[in-house]
Image (cartoon, helix red, strand yellow):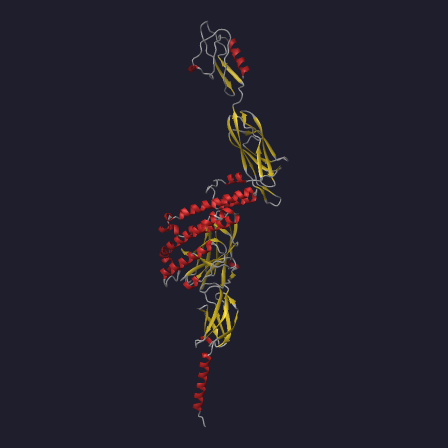
Length: 615
């Protein structure tokens, strides 16, 4: 049989088509995957047979994965967003519809690349302040309000250049905060200014730990830039994500009440954004023009979330928050986070988020519950005679603004005086002194050891201040109304105080904190108040007028007496003769009985001598 050239060509073409069809028709099988665990956006390669080249379709848990390259035996793809972390199945489907699969793990691990060269820092204290950093056409400005910090902190902002494993469709901006784990008493605000070309459609924000762990959704808003409330450090990220991606952002790994409800708030905001924006909001200007409508659509949902959130926090405060220090720490953190997010949201400015809806009442109720928890904790510390713990609790009470709330006093000094245990103060002021007297006043200081009922030993060289806080007492040495010094070897500081007037005089003794050689707090300083009732001094001089008078028989003269140095009861005596009693309304001397006497200079002198003897 003779074959022509065109017949051979046709046969070859048929053989080629048959081989190709056979290749697509055979089962697709995956024999290996590397790595077998990866995070979002990271590259993974599968090997096997029957992939069908660049026409292969890769899915992870049913979600299409972007294909990087594909051949008949190897395919590389990127882990898609919009799936849950944990065990997953990778499926390869060739053009003939045949599939192969293999087990895989979506790790969710995030890796940050920090731009240390553009980091910025500032020392921020209780009065608040601002830290700003700029990099890559983006400006990050963190505003910390007054009262957010109890003491000075060095705040560091470091821009983030890239984040691998990010569960968003795109990264727009990210910044890292330090120190790690810093908690604010009031929410700070991060403002991010994006480049004009940034696509803000489907905008979303994430927050997490400093190394990128525990990334979770967090609420945001726009007002001439992206605004993200910050209640604690350390990472905030802004990007874009579809609804599917948002629904599959991993939840918080620390199972806090705050994290649960922040996720709900962020999803509600994203839903409102998509409903109002549709396919718009691709620029900040577009976004801000629709922001009022987004807020109105979002805030009513937020109100319900805030109310549910408080309903979850209050039982913790009334339970664990009262029973133990660990429970108080958890309850306090959860309540302050709730209150911070309520205040940071625009909810209070919207009519249906007004006080009529109970948020203000919830804040007051929660504040009183937190105050009760701190009162219970400070009572426990007092029972343990742990002045160091008492001092820490007082500082937290002051920082949280709890003074005067619940049953707590308005003054932190009152807390110190009531609950300080180890420092024992005493005084030797008599309860009653006479005007003009000089009294030795001794303040004694001792240190209690061995618990609330332990032995009190004298505390030498303790800092003590003695203050005449009311009344007219003066210190003989120095003549001032305040004396400060150190106790002697027996724990005593003595001062002489003169009381030149009558009435009530208060003397306050203030003992300073006591520290050990390493600077650690040993005893919490406090104060006591001593009260002396100062009575009138002894009368020292009596003057009688007139000193010389002559009367005829049957006549009369009126005598007057004046006492210097005080007042008292005057008794008048006379011998020989008599005169009518002077009517009371005519008496000018201190009242007292009068008896008749002869009016003569000798008799007046007798009256004066008699008065001295009586007094």
